[in-house]
Amino acid sequence: MISIVIPVLNEGATIRQVIKTVKKTTRKIEIIVVDDNSTDNTVEEAMKEQVRVITSSQRGKGISMREGMMAAKHEIIAYVDGDILTYPDNIIDLLTGPIEKDEADFVKSYFERQAGRVTQLVAKPLLSILYPELSHFQQPLSGMIAARKSFLSRVHFENDYGVDIGLLIDMHHLGARIVEANIGKVENAMQTWEQLSKMSREVSRTILRKAENIPQENLETLGNINLIREQMEYSILESIDKLQKMVIFNLDQAVFTQSYLEWAAVAFDQEDTWHEIQSARYNPITTMRLGARIFDGRNIAEMLEVADSVPLVPGIREIVRELKKRGYACGLVTDGFGTVARHIKNKLGMDFALANKLHLINSVATGEFSEADYFMKDGEYCKSNMFPYIKEQFHINTQNIIYVGDGYHDRKLLTEAGIGVAFCPQYRGNAVEKIADKIIKGLSLAPLLDIAQASPAKFGIKLPAISKKQARNIGVGSLVGLAGAGLIYLLTREQKARKRLGKQQA
Image (cartoon, rainbow, N blue to C red; front, side, top):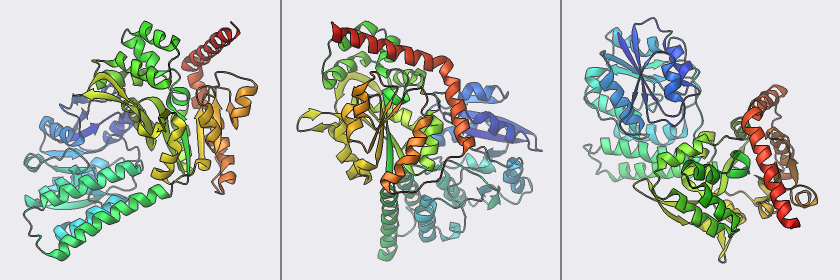
C-alpha cells in the first residue's frame, strides 16, 4: 500500500483532475489532500473525489507535507503537486517503483522541461560547490517525490521554497539511497520575477544552512558562492528589463464588478457609514482614511473572504493569461489596500499591485491608513503619479502602458497612459470620448485583446496574433458571467450615472 499526499493551496480548479490522474495507478493507495487553508473551493472539490482531506495547522507547503506524512498510514509515501494537469497516468508507478523494488529509499523526479533559472543559476551551482555528489540531479527543486516514511520522519521540512532542496540534502545526510525518475512531460506555471527573487533567496539560504558543518574557509569557495547570488539577482533584473510593455487594470473598475469597500461595508454592517463617507465627497485620501475605520478589528482572513466574494469581470483570468503570453506585464492599481490588491494579483497571476497601506497588527486591522509614496507628488495625491515609479522599477515608459479604467475616476490616468481604455464608462458622451483612446462598453474585456494586438505597432513591437479559437473561448467565458454579476454591474453603474447627472442638473 502507498500513501499519496497532495499539498494544496487555492487549487480548486485543478485538484479533481490531479486526483483522477493519481487514481489511475495500478497500486493500492490512499490519497490524502492537505489543505493549506485555501480561500477558494479546493476542499469542496477534493471531497467530491472521496479522498481524505485534512487542514494544515499553519500555512506553508513544508508544514502541509510534514503533516501529510504524519497522517499517512503506509511506509511508502509519494508527493505530487495539486496544480499540474499534465502528469502521466502512471505518475505514482514511476515515483514509487524504485522503492517497491528495494532499489531506493528516496526518489526525486525530473521531467521534460528546461530547468528554471533558480535551478540553473542558484541550486545546481551551489550544490556543485557544497554537495558535488548531488550536483548530477537534473531538477533538484522538483516537488514530485516518493520516500520511505521511516526516512521522512527524520528529516526537516523547510516551510518555504527551500523545502524540496532541503529534503534532498537531508536524505543524503541520512545515507538514503537516492535515485531519479523520469516522469515525462510536465508543464507548470511560470514564476513571476518577484517569486523568482524570493525562491532564489530561500533556496540558497537552505543549501547554505544545511552545509554549515562543511568547511568553507577557502576564499575561492566563498567568492564563488557570492558570485552565484549576484548572477541570480542580475538575471531577475534582466527579466524586468525585458518587460517592454504593460497593461494596468484599475482593481475596482476593471477587475471587480463592484467596489470592494462597498462589499466590505455591507459584510461588516457598516453600510450606512460608508454611504455617509461617499456622500460627503471628500478627497481620495480622506475618503480612504475614513474608509479604513470600517475594517477596525477585522482580521486578514475576513477581509480576504470579502475580496473573494466580489464577482470578477467575466473572462479576466483568460485575458491576463493571453496578455502575458504576448509579452505584456500585467498589474493592478487601486486607491484601496495592498492586502486585498496583492491577494487578487496572485489569484489572477499578475505581476504586481500598486495600492495604499492598511495598518495591521498581528494580522488584525487597526483602522489606520497610509497613502503610498508613489501616488504622491509635491504633496498632491493622484494615482497617475505612479508612472515615474513604474519607469524606475520596471524600465517601462509611460507610452508603452495600456491603462484600463472606468473613464470617470481615471481621467488623468487615461490621458497620460500610452493607450487609455475606458471600460464600461460611468459617464458617456464627448467627455469620455475626448479622454480615452478606446472605449469598451460591454461587460467583457475580450476587446482589450484587439487593442493590445494593435498597440504594438505604436510601440514598435511585433506580437503573435490571437487565434479565432482563443478569442471564441474568451468570449464564451465572458458570456457566462453576464447572466449574474454582469447584469448587476451594468445596472449599478447606470444607476450611479443617473444619480450623478441628477445632482449636476439640480
